[in-house]
Length: 101
Image 1 (spheres, rainbow, N blue to C red):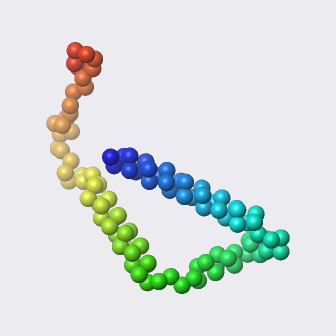
Image 2: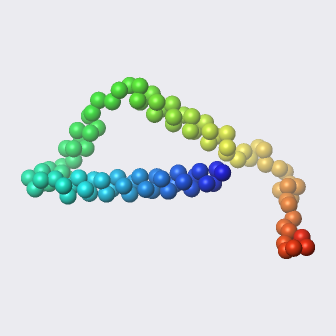
Image 3: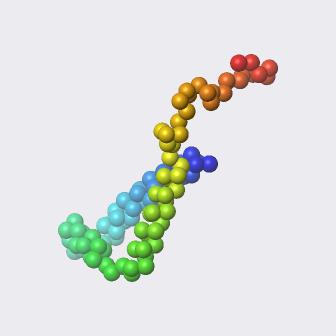
């Protein structure tokens, strides 16, 4: 299940980045001609970054980030828990109808 979740997350992130690129491109295409010259001065980015954001939104983002990192730490492989002999947990491969090894 974790592999499926990570695969979906990777695909979602790639889609989000791709959509973001096309969104900025669409913004540029739809601008009037006199505004296109100022688009690459990135004043719109400065305006976006100076927008006031409520403090509770920042707290929610930090909380979600911390919870996500804690869940990843609990799922990480620990070298201290690794078996001394890796052949102890080996399951022999089984093939075919007659379960041959």
